Every structure is written in structure tokens, then in C-alpha cells.
Amino acid sequence: MTNRERCQARIVRGSDAPCSRLVVSLGRPVGQNFQTTMTLIALVRPTQPNAGKAMKKIASFLFAAAAVSLATPASAQFAKPEDAIKYRKNALFVMQQNFARLGAMAAGKASFDAKVAAESAAVAEFMSKLPWAAFGEGTDKGDTRAKPEIWKESVKFKEYADKMQSEMSKLAAASKTGNLDDIKTAVSATGGSCKTCHDAYRKD
Ligand code: HEC
Image (cartoon, rainbow, N blue to C red):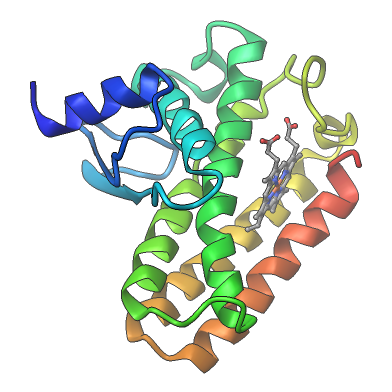
């Protein structure tokens, strides 16, 4: 068993035992626009109050991601509508957890750590590509806060999703430079792009 497997096994069992670094190798492309094989390093801090929950979410996201192949069209990627809903919610959750770390630093609520900022932004940028393939037909009902308008206004919905991804990429670029002022500007623009879509397409 590699360290990674041991770490994942602990997460799957729901244990909160120290497992501070989860290195996820995705051996094949996931997400519609992601053509390169890559290694995603998700940093989960066991000291955070939500670490156990976050780890479980990441673990379930990973199994969903591993089951997805680019060879199949987006609409056929999920065996059941519930799977698609779970996949997008988990992807959004993991993205938000990483984005929130930058938000806290930008607001002065957490001390600025350039390394954590760059790593969190890279994970958030990667995650920002994933939810959208899981908004296929038939996924409007169930355990979801998605408004039915999404499927009537799919062009606008995609526009908002693209806008957020492009703001998130700018945030990742700013985080690489380590300039806190640039990070603040990008956090605010990215946050605005989340809100625009939530106001229109997410139920309270
Ligand atoms: C294009 C539209 C859109 C954009 C942009 C968007 N979201 Fe969302 N978000 C949604 C919808 C729709 C849901 C409800 C999903 C569901 O319940 O199936 C959602 C749900 C969520 C959830 C709840 C997931 C869960 O566990 O139920 C979080 C957290 C979230 N979004 C964070 C963000 C953050 C942070 C951003 C910006 C960085 C963002 N979203 C940008 C549409 C969007």
C-alpha cells in the first residue's frame, strides 16, 4: 500500500486520523476542457474544524471523478441523475473550501501565506472546471438547489460558468506572483462571479 492509498482508505472509513496531505493522481483527463494528465494536490488541514467533512467530500468526489471518462459525452457520464448532482455539489464544495482560504487572507481574517494561497488557488482553479458537465438534462430534480431556469437559459448559465472560470484563472495567476493586492482584486472579481450565478440560478 502506498501512503496515498493508506490515506484514502482512512478517509473512506471516515476516520479523522492525521492525513494532512492527500495527493491525488488522476491518471486520465477529467473535466471537459482538461486535456492533460495531471496531478492534483489537495491540501487538507486536519486541524481545521471541517477537515473530516472536507476529506470525506473529497474522497467521494474522487471516486466520482475516477469513474468519468472524456471518451463519453457529458450527458452520458453519469449512471444516475443523483450521481451527477452529487458530483457537481462535491466539486463546488471542494472549490469553495479552497477559494475561502484565499478569501480569508484577502479580508485579513487569516494571515497571508503565499504558498498556501498559490496551492489553494491552483486547486480551486482545477475544481472550477468540473461542475458544469454534471448539469445535464434530467438533473433538475432531487437533492439539489439548482433552479429549473438553468435548463431554459443554458446559454446564459454557461456564460456565467465561463466567466467564473476565467476570473478563477486570473486569481490563480495572481496567487502565483504572491502579490496580495492583486490577489485581493482577483478574489473580489471571482466572488462577484459566484454571486451573479447564485442569485440567478441557485435556490436559497
Ligand atoms: C454558473 C453558475 C454558478 C457559478 C459561476 C457558481 N456557482 Fe456555486 N452553485 C451553482 C448552483 C446551480 C448550485 C446548486 C447545485 C445543486 O444543488 O445541485 C451551486 C452550489 C454551490 C455550493 C453548494 C454545494 C453543495 O455542497 O451543495 C457551493 C459551496 C458553491 N456553489 C460555491 C460556489 C463558489 C465559491 C463559486 C465561485 C467561485 C460558485 N459557486 C460559482 C451555480 C454556480
